[in-house]
Image (cartoon, each protein chain N blue to C red):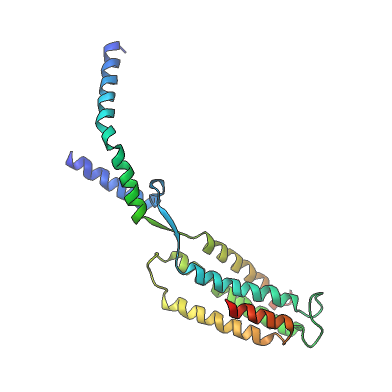
Length: 141
Length: 67
């Protein structure tokens, strides 16, 4: 009888580790870092969407020299591609962390890298009311 | 199959049921304890971020090359 109970307990533990005991009502929670990752991503999205509206020739773009010329647009795109690549890497890392696990130092460095790229991109966008609005939104995050 | 065997099987099944029945409230307790300690990380938002970031990265790479 005792062996039987031990067997049941072992099967239960193995089953839980494989399925997350979902059928037994596991509690689903967001990782504490999800909010930070989301904020970082939304900042990049705001810059990505807004910069495209400011490219010279776009209907929504201000007149030169306030619009983003082609050379700057390409450089901004290069920097944003890097930023989104790191952004994706950060989200993938956080996805694998246990709920009580701290951020690895490499990820903290990646966040600093994205912030530096954001600063570089904002520096490349010519001053305009649209840019002022974007900077305000970015700083509010 | 003869009737005696069927009746005996039913009687046995009833005995098993009656011996397990008092454990029903315990099952609720087991579920409560599991829910308390078995915390599953919801990754849906992170998955969406990865997908969106990868898509935007590709678009920007194209624009960086003038496409």
